[in-house]
Amino acid sequence: MTLLAKRVNKKGRYAAPMSRTTKPLVADDVEIVRRVLAHVDGGTTDEGTPWREPVENYLNPHRFTQEWNLLRAMPSAFVPSAAIPNKGDHVERVTFGVPLFAVRGHDQRARVFRNACRHRGFALVEDAGCSHALVCRYHGWTYRLDGSLAHVPHAHGFPDLDMSARGLIEVPSYEADGLIVIGAIDSDGARSSNADADEAMAWLTDGTTWRDKLLPIDRVVSVESFRLAINWKVLIEQFLEGYHIRWTHKETLPNLYDNLTVVETFGPNSRVTFPYDAIERLRDRPESTWVGRPPLTFVYHLFPNVIIGAFPQLVQVVVIDPIDVADSEVVYYTMTRADVGPGMELDGEEPLDPAELLPYIFRVVAEDNEVSAGVQRGFRAGANKFVEFGRHESAIGHFHASLGDRLAQFAATQAHAPL
Ligand code: FES
Ligand SMILES: [Fe+2]
Image (cartoon, rainbow, N blue to C red):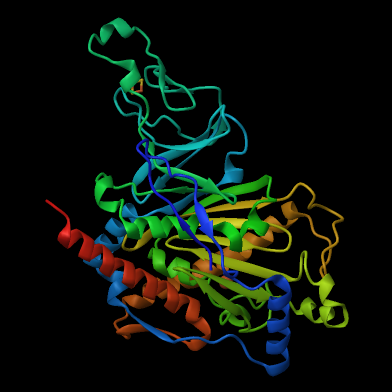
């Protein structure tokens, strides 16, 4: 396996990772196709450990507070790099309750800042855009793309202002393999700069498993966000099993196999691969032709709250932001490559235009969110003490096990932290 060692330096930036590689974290495409065809022949699917998650863990505000504190103290993927490809591009996001934004500097480096002007705190970035400088629209304080304060109108009115000390407040960040990842955003950075956070950062910045899917991306097709009355963990779960395909997506995904997935885990993360029935055409072709764009969708869960859906035609990065115990904000970044478009031939698939695919994709998204809302309502029925996940839903059990482990580690850290 590859594990990266990384430390936050004095300026709050993550030092370049050192990697030590032994074996790949996930199977290559040829091996995945082999495993899928064996499952097709056997009428089987990957199976792991079943899991029972207490319903209380989705409803209890105290439990939510524990999760919230953990999420704010740990690294997480912030936005895909493709959201800010050019100098001056910026995008904002409220992350675990904290308004932040990312901007690409003149030096091409992506930086993440707390989204508050240093005058009276107005949100500096209100929408995605591109500019040479960041100008607060309240009174005109102006910041360079590296966050330093460049101009204050009528500056003589602030006799004690040291402009060199009033730049924007940066959040530690690291860009690798198509993602911008942030460190802890709680106000007590010292507590979260521990070995656990370093290891968590390593699992988010070692993109060996998704690099080939995300790095070629150079075009954002759409950014959509929804506020949903659904606990954040239910929204994660909906991506991580193929057991619901035949029932929930009967009309929209008829070409996906019913309950046939390949499940792999790496650190707290997982990858679930969903095959299309066109994969059977590969049987008659040499294995050397199985690479490229086989008819598979790879769904990565990057712990804690980001999903990468790599479809043959496009890639979707989905960020699930908890708001409170029963509400979440979900942002879908749908992206593709410049060479994917009308007339493009896919292995075993019809040529498709990513733009034409969007309404269809969001029909599938709506189906998933509708059943997740139903799960959320069902919690209140008082019927179940726990939610049951089968052997074929093992990536979900892995998520809950990882979360449970980290909550326990975090509680232990807090118990020993100096007051
Ligand atoms: S709050 Fe930004 S310039 Fe006043
Ligand atoms: Fe689904």
